[in-house]
Length: 318
Ligand code: UVW
Picture (cartoon, rainbow, N blue to C red):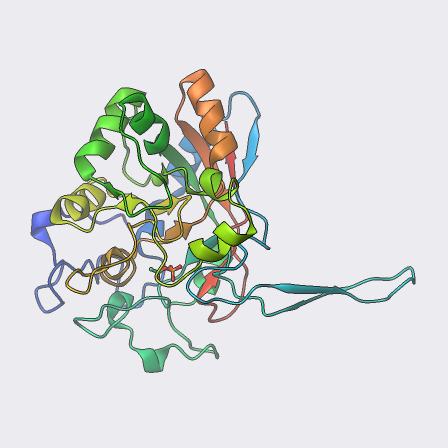
């Protein structure tokens, strides 16, 4: 299918019979890839040209972190079978794919106003069995690769005298993201994977055991993007393939009752994957050093039929 013309924010929904703001139908009625469709062979090949130094940055955090996990999720238990023998296997128990670094698939979060997931999928379509809809296997079987751009909000904010703790409900505005992009010399291209660093993992790594328990109390508090019309416009008009952050939800937390989660917009209305708790610190340090905030990005999620989320197994290569 030829790439469709991408509508601007004010032209949504794509189909007037669909919910307000939805991009459903842009990639066909059965589509389960959403904006990952923008990762065309041509864009991937162009992105590969960004590899100049051969430096590789792995973005999965330790599977055991955070500990305790947030949102009352389970902490992974690992058994190595075989005792003192010469043959071992792993057994993971309580493995919640969202307890550590993760992609949220389109079956993770529905739109609470319209009671649907991306492309009109309903809860009854999400079975985890053959024919299941919007599962992570759709992305795993395709693979994710393309150009990523990093906006290091944390470094920029500190340079501007904006002081905040990544573990507090600090709001990141779209206008600030534009300012970071300008300061870093970043120009977005259609189909970019947009990576935003808030400093959350760097902050979390400084906490002691007691402080980590407090950080995991529900609802958690952390810095993230504002849930506003301006943010939605910013994110849609960039026509990004996915969004990624080092914090646990990309958007600021907690979500006040009267506000609609950006998760609903990104996952359910637009088909934009959300990456959370990506370990960005080494990548960010390198970008600050060489002044290049773009890289080649790859990710191979778990090929699990109907999976709701997955560790991304993501690499940034410069
Ligand atoms: C939210 O749903 C807000 O976070 P997560 O994607 O980790 O579930």
